[in-house]
Length: 393
Ligand SMILES: Cc1ncc(C[n+]2csc(CCOP(=O)(O)OP(=O)(O)O)c2C)c(N)n1
Ligand SMILES: [Mg+2]
Image (cartoon, rainbow, N blue to C red; front, side, top):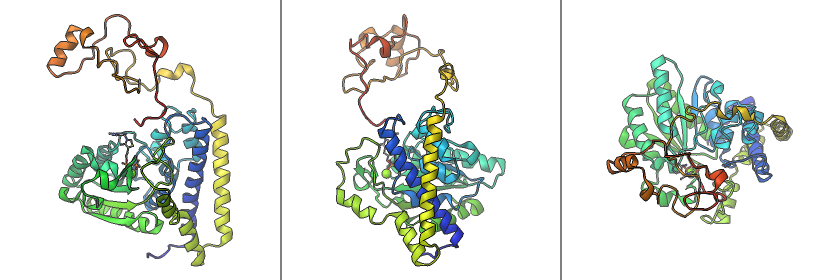
């Protein structure tokens, strides 16, 4: 087991992990109270992987993650009140209240999100690293993604370019053993994910993602290689989320005993115990860390509750396209029935048919006013719009 760093560093690592844990527990509670809307993915249990990684990054380094990144932003230094305000959809949120849980973003801290498309953050990470290279900056980009994301086409394409162009990028797969309700054994042909980029020229290693010190050491070496040798590497950190995939996960894919077993390896408890036993921290300091986290999270909820909602007139701000592109859009209805468009061959405009036969998409304006199912019901099916309770996007 790697040695503990100095007392000040241990205190800071424990404080960050505790703050994130407390923040997410509270976020879950506020979601149940409907103060936070949209989706909510909690990373409770994964704190050592998050904090171990960010603790060895420099301020100028970039971090990009997934939709499970409240902790990542806070670990990078974003104020918990701003993250909570984002969950509440308020103007003081990191994205002005327009992104919600999956889109936390803080350019000042070089936290580049918050990304809802599984694997979609990988090519962006390569782009960020390329921009650092282009501008002659010393920054490294850290890209964190899930085990499920390692199966996407983006993974292979990104690894290829990262190796080919020797980009200053470092990849960390947060292997929490599941992609939604599917275990790694059932979703990946190669279950040793650290080997998955070898064929592209990117070597990998496996580490215990529940041990903040092991993560720190593994990531520090990866950052060094990226920064000094322009050599991207891949680290696979074994970790676990105690909660469901998102707030409404019935968790039929795993046994309660498995969750309990991982809880016994809790990264925060284990680290606090280790620090106390080694005489690096006292019980009083551990208690102080808990109290401070509690205070900061309570203050974050207060600030978010007091922050106003965005003004109605600002609805169309920050949109790239308003009212210019007509056409048929992807449906909102999350129902098992055929969606609008699927049964519309008969009414298809001639232009759309022509394009469809040529294999192209149609984005021309439909004849007459565009129906708005939200207020008029569905004119095609004659049914009210229906939004399923929780179906993952
Ligand atoms: C391209 C794409 N496909 C599918 C989904 C639906 N989806 C959301 S999360 C998820 C599982 C991803 O698992 P993993 O990468 O292991 O991350 P974790 O949720 O475990 O952190 C899926 C399939 C999506 N958001 N994007
Ligand atoms: Mg996963």
